[in-house]
Amino acid sequence: MELLERLVTVFAENGYLAVFLALLLCGAGVPLPEDITLVAGGVIAGLGYANVHTMFGVGMAGVLVGDSGMFLLGHHFGARILKLRFVARVLTPERYAKVQHKFERYGNRLMFIARFLPGMRTAVFITAGSTHRVSFLRFFLLDGLAALISVPIWVYLGYFGADNHEWLAMWIHRGQHGLWLVGGIALVVALVLWWRHKRRVACESGSR
Image (cartoon, rainbow, N blue to C red; front, top):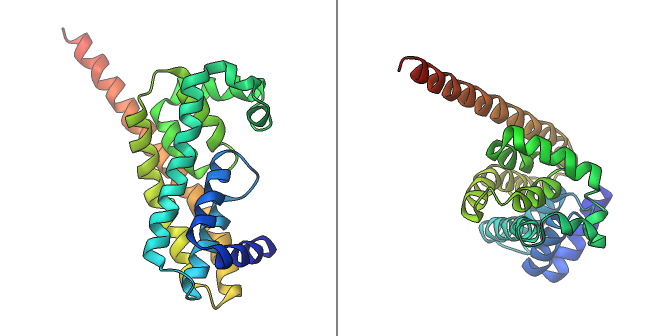
């Protein structure tokens, strides 16, 4: 909660721009938790320093711009991006190879699930861009759909818990585990749909 209190102070003094810039840093892989950043934005709205609905919009914009920036860096530089110092800190060659393998296995589903995997988002988005097999529009839609689940949860949680820190801390903890659960369920559903599609295609091929 100490980080949350510090962010609330900074955001209350500097407004929406500070929240937006902080979310860009989250997207770039800086060790600043995106969920706590969004909650802090909601808290200052709950304290009367901002409008909560505008804060939701700012949160969505910051998240999507930050994520898109990582995708486009990967798309433009490919594997060469590993030579960039700030990227190498969050995406080692070993981790890049591991994410590439997962991406080849799960494809688009991994881009959606990545939003619910702290510490994995930046690596997944850079790798998605570097494969050149995913259009920016498809990436943006998948990431946007996932953000429409996570962003409002954190922003409005901060808004409603602005005056009750104990309640807020409890629900932040529950929310973090809850989003992992949502991501896991979404992955299972996606795998089932993929398996049914492959089975249908195989049956159609066999009947010809």
